[in-house]
Amino acid sequence: MRRRLSLLMIMMGCGLAALAFDAFAQQPPAPTRPTLLFKEEWKLPVHAGPANDENRRVTPAVVTNARLDLKLYGTDSRAIAAWEHEGRVDLWTGMTTSPVAVTLRDKSMYIDLTGLARLRWIVRTSSLHVLYPVVKLADGTFIAGSRGVSTDGDFIQTEVAFGGMRWYKLDPMKVVTTSEVKTPDLSKVDEVGFVDLAPGGAHGVAGWANLSTVELFANAVPR
Picture 1 (cartoon, rainbow, N blue to C red):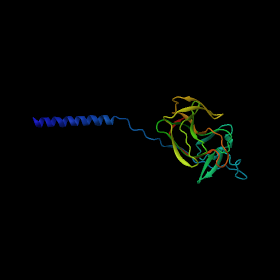
Picture 2: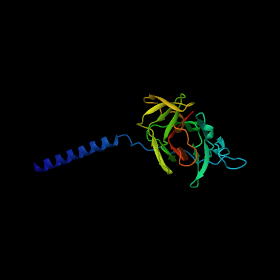
Picture 3: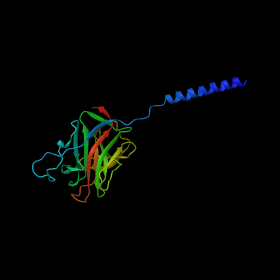
Picture 4: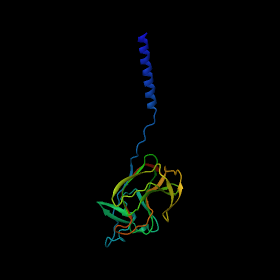
C-alpha cells in the first residue's frame, strides 16, 4: 500500500512539473531592446575666413551619416552653430534668439519608437536650459516629451525612453508647446530630436545647450 501511494505521489509530482514547464514554455518571450538604427556624430561646416559665430552656423553638410537629413525649427534656428569640445563636434544653441528644435530624419525609413526604443545622446546644458525629446509623427504632428535633460554645464551621455511620458503638441514655427496629446502613435515616426524651449544667451555662462553624438535604438518601418 505504501509503495502504491509513493508511486502515485511521484506520478502526481511529475504531472505537476510537466504542467508548470508547459505553462512556462507558453510564456511570450521577454522584450529585447532594438539594435542601433542610426548614429550621428556631426562635423564642422566648411567655411572661408575666421571660425566665428557666423561661419560656424549649421548647414546640412554637418551631418556625417548619408542616410540622415538634418531639420531645424524656430525663427532663429539658422543661428545654431557647430563647435568642437572633448574631441567631438556638437551643435550649440547659444546664439539663437528664439526657442529651437533640431531633428534627424531617416531618408528611407520611418521609426518605431514603441517598446524599448531609446534615444542616447551626449548633451550639455547651462543656466537652467533643458532639452526635451521631440518627434514628428507620420501625420505631420510635432510633439515634445516631458522627460527633460539638464546637466548644469557638464557633457553627459543620457538616454530617453519614449514610453510612459507625457506629450505636448509643438508648434514647429514658434517652437512653443500647446495642448497635451494623449497616447500618440509612436509606431511610425518621421523625425526625432530635441527641443530647447528657451532662446540662447550667447557665450559665457549664459543659457544654452549643446548636442553631441546621437544614437537611436529603434526599429525601422519602410516608408
